[in-house]
Image: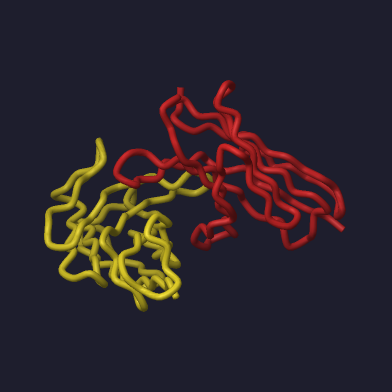
Length: 109
Length: 120
């Protein structure tokens, strides 16, 4: 099993829709997780950290489910500009990040 | 704050030549820099972790003699792809983790814009 797994998508949604992605991880000792956004041919940019208590930033909400070993990202009221690939990252020891393959989101008018 | 640059942004080279990629933290001192590689439609794969003044730590399966990493200062790390071959064609991205600098988190990794390498 891969350390971090994501559905590659693409998820095609209309503007205004609510969409959610999950990311599963195999190491139960993992402590910290992140969601990054990556646009085509660009570097990843940190979207939000994922805390045990969840994290919300505007239209974006991240949740951590330790029992089932997954994290989720919920995007409400999708915008065209939300179209991108969303990478899930797990912080290993020594501050190294392990990424999933990413989930591609396409928001259409 | 927390700007990381890479140079060059893209490079085309012939098979057998070597290519050097620079990663700089422009407004903060990076205690650690990381080098990743990303093939099309795949995830970022960590190649190595680089600490200033010490040897880089390579991930399993990454040839240290082929991918030479030098971290000469707290703001500069270089990756040299030696004797490049077409299968080395990829998107190489560095990231830097904080140290000292205004508006810089010490736990977050800041990514450079990446270098697209094409070996013909």
